[in-house]
Image: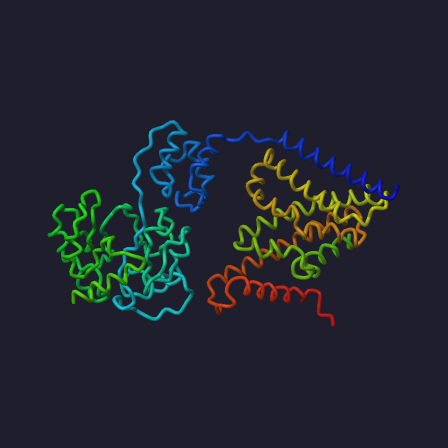
Length: 281
Length: 192
């Protein structure tokens, strides 16, 4: 009887002692919680993508509550989340446009010519160190998928040597924009119908030399756009989305078939584009 | 004094917790992704292991031994260590916020870590007194920090390697860990 009672008593005492200690400590060491920040954290998407520039959703919530960040700082949540946070903070939300990422390169393996055969670390940043990557075009996608690795939503895949963003999965956080060592990923409005799949700043002659599908700054799109939304500047066409009406004139006029229409982009947008190019030629 | 250095040397190198005793392999593989997190984890382990060595020694010496309950030391130590880690976490959050933000996310991971429990049990097994126990706990954790930081460096290199598909990810990590353990066996020499 005695031999079992002693351990039971000792452990009961130890258990009660530690339990009381923790209970007292929990009461004595309570940290005043920031209720605003907690409410904001509940509204945020919780993906911790880091697109806002803070280490995670909780860090952003702290920053918003402290007045360091704007209520629309969460690029992923878009206008709905911004409106909710604005309601918590008691301010008016600025209208925010939902964005999505777009890789501004169409130079797949068979169209873009190469400088050398790259056989190093499979990472874009490493390849860029070697003479700016293996493509002759200095603004071409290297296709080793640094953006795909960085994407917190798994929206990017590399198709035929060019990264493609699946716009259905893209939340516009902009992490890939920072990850791309070539700086050729841009955020465009989610509803944008068209985009120019090239950002080469070489002139027409040099672009022709390095890639079959680069913008040669022929200005056909600029001349034919009925709403004057396209301007060729620094040897590359650029669409002003505030003016674009969404007609398909530029898509038809572009001799290099690099003005894209979102109707043409399915899962493998680039493949569809190539079929279209073959049909025309 | 010489004796203390012997304990430290053995705990850090020849009897390294990870590479020789194989304690604490879970955080070793789980948190060694980046050198910065590895160092944070190592510091948290050092902090907890030193204090828990002292606490468990006291519990064993003044509570278990007098009543002849040595056979219950494992469960008693788990209880004491878990409480201690929780207590430290709360204490740091309230009073030492800089340390809390540096170690905070690692502390709950150590609550029932086998390396911390292992240090407490080895202390008893070797019959260390109070000073020796604390020194052993501290230097065993330093050995853990050394191992996890070395391995984080190795993993930085592995990340860009292109191994055959069947080796990708965890298998290659285990092989690398085995090679590192073999290198550490050089400190104690081979015995056949």
